[in-house]
Length: 602
Image (cartoon, rainbow, N blue to C red; front, side, top):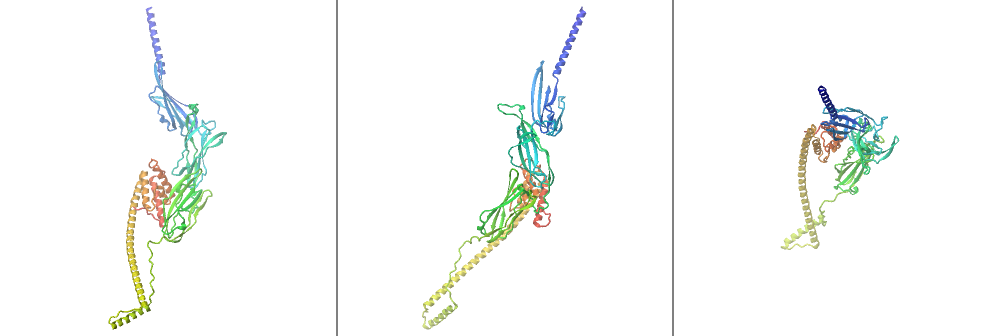
């Protein structure tokens, strides 16, 4: 009996141990750490987003989401935490929500995440192009890209149209197309919304236009453009009373395009290549040229406008050499005006014209050649020759000397007076001191003669004084001109020496990476190179040197001054310096008419 009692006690103890063990196993299983990953869709249309949820339990950390960046963009992220008590055991957990966009079409893998030695399973997302059969896009919002001419001339305007088709749920879109070293981009004004039907669905179409200017011939690729946008999504919640439907981020992508750019036309006869749709040249005088007088300046203003051109493409107005006219040019004003389907640019120049002699002077005709891109032929705008009838200037200060007209005295009259004087003198000797007596007529004649002689003497005195004054004036002018020649020579020598030092500084900075310092140095050198008409910005350097290549490069380089980045332009500073030296050498060759390797002396 006692033995049986002891056996029963041992069985009871074993059952209790087993129960405790099983209970511990259940509790251990309930509190085991876990990490899971899941997505709302495994097949998406290119540009649409997928939502990834990562759930962790009893973990000390969160997964490293940077593992997603090779294949996805993280649009939005958020973390929520939770805490629960089961059978007296406290359990902590979290859920990470990530909205992702695949960077490319095809299979995009979400990798396995590992935290505290616990890992999730990898997931494969299948990204298909829009229009793939059997795959309905989540959003009926898409984009199309087109050009009006895929085979333009180099530097000819190409209109690029970007259309966003919206089924009514598009909340915002911000397309941005930027240029590079191969192509210059100017944004044009927005056009109004239009309605268009595609595949039985009516869309609102938002059109964005850009003016493209290819800077080299050959094949130029316009890569696919990504456009961040957002659409209204009622599944995200919102308030029906306030009508504030939340939005969801999406990305719209365009198809890549290609341009086959032709070189400048072989039949073009102008040294300045200007392919535009239209060119117009206007002029205006500051006053009536029929009232112009010698020595008095007047202003001649030109306005050269091109349709389908940038401001730096427009050439300088050629300044003629007209004997009798001094012409001084002012710094040109360059402006661009974006219109609906064109970029219209204007070059405004002012000439100060000073006639230095009276008479009929002729300002020769002005001819500017351009290439009509619509008719594909060379044309020219002509400002006809103009005749200027220049009147004499105002008379010099001072009054004219009026010469008094003296009575005429003949030689016979003088001889008769002398004979009478001799007779009277002899009679006076004989009469013992009798006073000479003359007739009234003789007396008047002598008075007139004396008056005439006095007037002639005074006139010679005036002539002598004037000659002396003229001699002194000539002496002073000679001294001043010699001093001016010395001053001009010294100023030219100083300018030459200063230009050489500035050029040396430009070359030294071109071997570095400081864009702002190089820009400043080029402008300072240019102001020394053209001291009479100072340069104010980098594009003017290219314009003065007659190089469209350098003008475009300098415009891009000038923009880098305000971008906040260093050495991120289309070309390195050494390449830009090489362009500058080529343009300067060409300018020297044009001026001398012979080949020359000269550059500013160091």
